Amino acid sequence: MFKRILVISIIFILWCSSIAFAYVFGGSNLSLSMYPEFNSYLPYNPSKYEVELYVEEAKKYVENCNNDIQRIQEAKAAAIREANDAIYRYNNGF
Image (cartoon, rainbow, N blue to C red; front, top):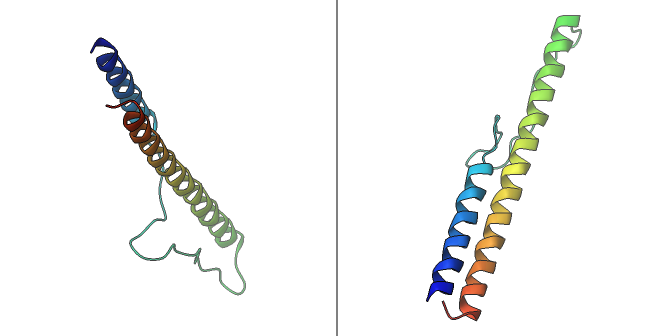
């Protein structure tokens, strides 16, 4: 009985700590439909300011893409961890 409580406590502590560290700070491009493409406008004969603004928008888009990738990888890892926990509990009779 003590072993079962200890194992459940350890799993709970690891689960709580993984949630605490799994938050991704930053923007996102995710929406309810398809993943949006980069669609900033650059005039035919742009000024230096317009090109700088275009490049900054592209950098922001790429940064948001990286944040989305990290969120997806963390969700995938959480799903794998939950499945492994279920297998462990099943194999050990919990």
